[in-house]
Amino acid sequence: MANILIIDDDQDFSRSFQRIIERIGHPCQIAHTIKDAFDRLQRMDCDLIFLDVNLPDGNGLAHIKQFQSFSSLPEVVILTGDGDSDGATLAIANGAWDYVGKPISLNNIMLILQRTIAYRASKEQNRGPRKVKRSAIIGESPAIMNCLEVMGKAAGSKANVIITGETGTGKELFARGIHENGATPGKLVVIDCTNLSTHLAESTLFGHTKGSFTSAHEARDGLFKLANNGTVFLDEIGELSLELQKSLLRVLQEHKFRPIGSEKEVSSNFRVIAATNRNLRLMVEQGLFRSDLYYRLNGHQIEIPPLRSRREDILLLAEYYTEKNCRESGITPKTLTPEFLNALHAYHWPGNVREFVNTMAVAIDNCQDEPSLYSHHLPVDVRISIARNSFRHNPDKEQPTLLEPGRIHGAIPLPFSPGDELPPLREVREIVVGQLENTYMRQLLELCANDVPTACECSGLSRARLYELLKKHSIRLK
Image (cartoon, rainbow, N blue to C red):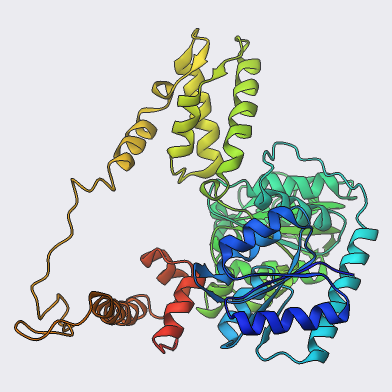
């Protein structure tokens, strides 16, 4: 028996669906909005959520991970009346169990329930007390706990791993975590692809014999040889030239290579972890990254969230690095004042955890013999950014431009003219906003060459909201 939650604003459909599930023998509740769903999930132990896409207070696809982060870790099935391949892709990428269209047949309902219940029972039975060594990975947010769960699975596997995330999020920390929690007895060898020049790459990676070139005064093993029975960490793999990608592919396929000047091939048994802050799949589509190398690397995937997306971890990070810096410097531990913590939460952290670590070190240096940390101990550039952001949305500083009746910037006509009978304001607002959205979305796609990640970055829209607006205005990606 499973506890089910239906999240759908269609009251007739949701009630009929609820009766079907209850007749099958499963308790079932209904929520008509995302807010109502959050309230219900706080009070129920949910196993499975049937989630509609278009809800009165938001897009269901944008909230999948939030629903999955509740204590019962429910599975999510997207249920929609106007599904498409883009929505399905987004749903599955965000961790949805399935993506099905309305109307849904009784057989399909029973099949989803049977598979979900069997999967959860198996997962619960095999959920051992596996503990992973975290090293310096700090955080208890759902996003970080999900990353640690994948890290644990990857550590027990021989499959390759791709770690993605913005600069400074801690990709190398997770690579070390996978290596340290794994069964390989050898070293973790880090290869920084950003500093790997074509001229010296083969010697660095594969080694060379004595006298094989002018400066080869002695034989030297390459990094792949040093990684025998261990792990190769290819940091920022997206920066590798196409020529080096070709050389790397052969080594990853055969685990053999020939040092410069040698007539014999050398074998090395290693696993590979790659990391990048770039979109490798997009680079493949653009011809900037070899598809065969991408598929060779693409095993387990860990996407590390930026610090601004897991602000609930800031207190833990602040406590950890305050204690660490004070201990290493031999000074009295500092107290974190509420004002200092508020400042940390207010900052955007473009450099992520790497910037946070350096900021804490500077704050403690500035604090010196004082017992408590305050915001004025933070680096000047951080304080300036916080101050500037605090005034960004001041209504006294930024006033909207008033438009003359009958026309609008961008040659979008208003649905009335001076002297005509005025329609209701709500109707006018809906028409004008729809016209603006349509024009904006078309110009956005033209500017970004139909590249969705770039469009999201330029517009500030989430991927789910972008797809929702494209569907609303019948705009297709070319």
